[in-house]
Image (cartoon, rainbow, N blue to C red; front, side, top):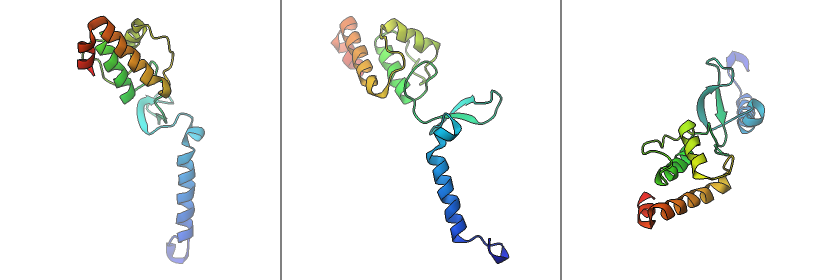
Length: 136
């Protein structure tokens, strides 16, 4: 600080640089890190939210738009009931996923399109291509 309590430009720049470094390395510093907050906390009692950088691999407990895509494909294949596409991979989604016969545990980003395609093929074989196309 300078005389009179004014902060110098150098101090402000230093704080911004340190803040940027902390932000860039938040996952390594704080463990799980993310762009979206989860409702769970890392202390079990209303503390700081657990944050996740990526929603992959998709598995039970995952949340987000990619889970919703998977749930919609499971609905189209009639492994999951209509209206169950809430974006949260809970017990119902897990059960539907297991019934589908897909053996991948923890769907990676690169595997998601293949899984969705396999479910669409399954729906087409079981219910006809017109049904599968309408479901897209």
